[in-house]
Length: 334
Image (tube, rainbow, N blue to C red; front, side, top):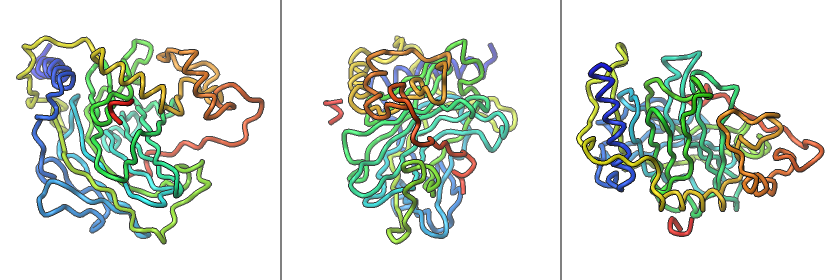
């Protein structure tokens, strides 16, 4: 194992300590200009005077977005996000990792996507991963939340190591993706940048495109703050790293999510998950190899879509999956 590989390996150990112990609250909050750069949208991206928070907006002309200055191979990445309010059908806000600009035919991706809705309906949150260009196998999950994400800021975080990916909302783990041998290259394993965008997803985001963005409510404004980029930065040309922080590596390493966190995650998924690709019998006659089928979970999901999850005779609509290329232009009760 080379020096850079060893340092990233040790850094991965430190990440488990950081997250499991809640130390992430003490990780440095980066000013926007120290960690990110303007991606697109011209003056639809506004950095606040304090330099620590950003507005992204969508109007008739364009959406907007920013990207991390560095590429990362594993790490803990987080931001506080406040979503647009009122009528948000067709509006998509994304906080995600990708290397599609470097590996155009075999890119990796780890996604938080916030899917707008018609007035009176809550925002929906979606997580997804791709590895090595495996876009034909969508690994989406969708959830409702126990709060209104347009009322205030909430923290959304991604932990990415060589063996697992964990998504967090306000320090509650909501999804864990473990790397399995059967996944092969479908597990994200190449350096990625971190992105944040707002854009028009009218063709698919709300009821399969039935409800589109209504620009009389524009501009749609989303706010980002509390940026954490605690990762293993790599050289974009040589794909190697000299910036891995292993200061916590000497401490005992948890084997995964703590028992108390797992209880919260299980409660969240039981109460708020509305879709999982593993149970989608329209898309997958045989579930992808990494899926572990839970009969109780399968029965719960039939409430949301009996046909998709095996309880109906006819499919009354087509679930539309969007192209990633369009994207650039009660915690105690869960």
